[in-house]
Image 1 (tube, protein in one colour):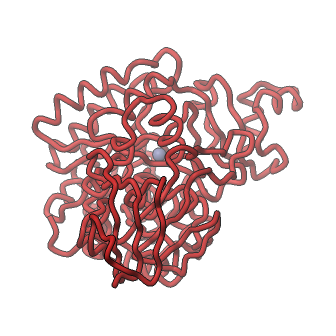
Image 2 (image 1 turned 180 degrees about the horizontal axis):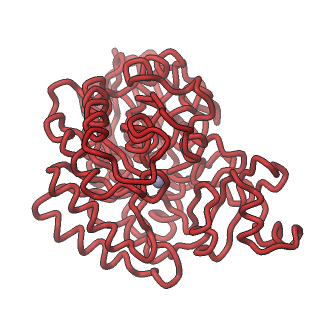
Length: 481
Ligand SMILES: [Zn+2]
């Protein structure tokens, strides 16, 4: 007798193996049996005939840190079949938050107020657990946050030996309290003033804890190749696995450079562990900044504090209305955010199907007019890239959002449909699954996600959140290497 029995679905087990028709038996929060369970019964029998059954999707790159607390039903994620979100990316984490300066623009964007941060990960994770989100979460410790704790107001420089020691101590405590590793956002102020050696020193702390290093690299445009080399060097010198976040090549004259970056990674993989994540769109999104405005073919403003009414509009038309240049218009709109069109489909498909590439949305959930990746990433990869464009088989695409991600982030018991694993399950319709979120109307639920189970309980069905706060904080396990 199971609690839930999912019958006659095409089962993608998350390992990258082709699907097989099978039943899945769930008891409590665990998968108990997979196979022909025709003679079994359950409290809740789900007929999945004609549907696909996969492990719940793991969003490899998010900024959902505060959203887990602000909107714990996590509709943007559950509606895509996502059951676990990786947070604390791009150098920005809500703990340990002991700032000795004003918070940076990106920190402010992710964490709207001091209600959603905490002095250490123990109290931060307790806050998340108290909010009872419906999806699981795991957390990186942000290098930018550590810098703003340790370095006072003058951040436009390398950290001193003493300051690095303070950051190391905070990072070590964070790892002991369950953070999964260190993230950097070397593109952004104030992290861009950090030399490679500063990051290597910090990353060395990770080794004995089995921590991971994830990086929003120093440059994703003219110096993208050099930036990949820097990440590889950091991983190699600190002896830690690296994850290159939202890998892309920005700017028309850099299109195609993914051939070179992926080759460099392949070569380095002979002696070290390297993964990447990617979102399936040719436009990026972050705070308004001069470099990106100059580089993009088109810029859509997503939010602006002084001019909230321009949200969703093209910067070019705003500039015309103001009667100034695009750059001057941008300066008037600060602080603000934008979507930048500057990537190439060839690079996207090449990176997405490359060795050890995972799917991550990088959505900014508190943005008033977010990039559509926040609501559409996973159904878009499955429906548009795997089924319609056939850039990879469906079971390969599923692997890149389940088993592969669980392996790279050391999420024990997740990402695979096998007895003994946690019952995070997404049931989807192979024929109809597709994203509906667009750049014009980004807050749209996708089609084809039929039912989502998190830790053995249904969290999404009939196009609605029905979760009872069953998501868990996934802590780096003590002693785990
Ligand atoms: Zn980033």
